[in-house]
Amino acid sequence: MQVINEIDTDPKARDAFFSSLDPNAPLVMINLLKFKEKAEYPDGRETNLSGAEAYNIYGEAVVKMIDALGGTRVHGGLVTNIMLGQVEELWDAVGIVEYPTPAAFQAMLDSAEYQEVHVHREAGLAGQLNISTTSPGHVSGR
Image (cartoon, rainbow, N blue to C red; front, side, top):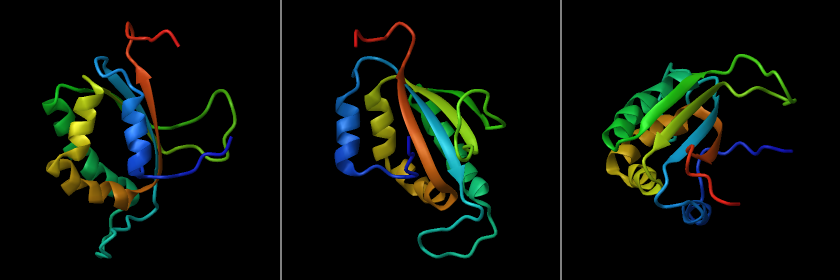
C-alpha cells in the first residue's frame, strides 16, 4: 500500500467525502501527521519555527474552534513506535477528534477563523492522513 502525503483535499474529493457520511451521526476523525523539519510558509516569510511548532499554532486555534462547535479532542500525541505491521517511516503524531456531525466539521473548515490559521498547518505539515470513523452506536450496516 502506497500512502501519498497530501495536506489539502481537492474540492471534488472533499464533496464526495462529506456526501458519503451519515449527516446525523457524530464524526470521529483520526489524523496522522508528518511534520516538515522547518516550517515553510507559502508567502515566503522567514521563520525559525520547526514544522511541529508551526502546526501547534494551528492546533491551538483549532482546539478552541472544536470546543465552540461542541466537538471533543479525544487524543493527541506523538507516535513512538509500531507494534504490528510495517511502514517505511512512522508518522510523527496522531490526533483524534469527535465532531457532533459532519456538518459541524464542514462549517469549521469553511469558517473565516479556520481559513486564517490554516497557513500554519500548511507551513508545518509535510503530509497528513485523515481517516473518518463512526462513533460507537452509530455503525451502519455496511
